[in-house]
Length: 138
Image 1 (cartoon, rainbow, N blue to C red):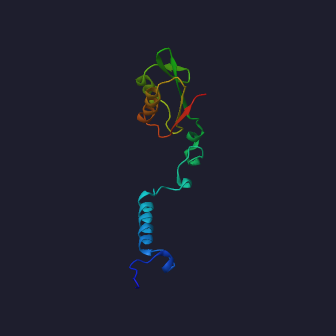
Image 2 (cartoon, one colour):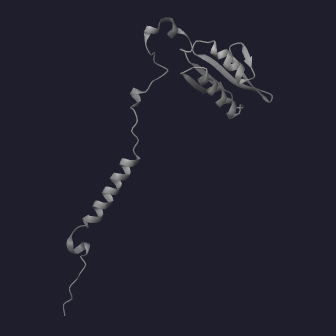
Image 3 (cartoon, one colour):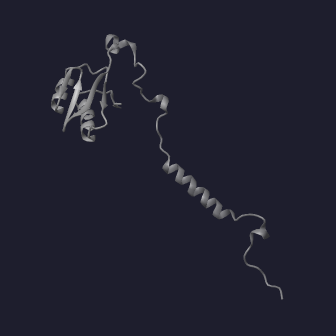
């Protein structure tokens, strides 16, 4: 008595079933298309290291302002040049008087709370600095 087989084995047909393979390939293709992020190439990003243009004249010759955030006891101290300030309002008042083209660098000591570091960065942005850099102090 001969029984017919309804299923095809892999060994009988000599290959893999392509329907499920195509489904898997399309699912992977859709996954990668959805998760890819389209961002600008790094060569198009602005850098504070290379000069923007020489048409600005003497403004391009300024060095960036350096704000050092440190701790004195329980208080946070913002140092800008020879000025030592204890509030963000004083820091904002002093930063408003400075030229904005050169940018500002915020150096933060290790023992400073995160809120004070973020506050100094936000104060620099609030007074009009567009180039604000964060540097951990060594």
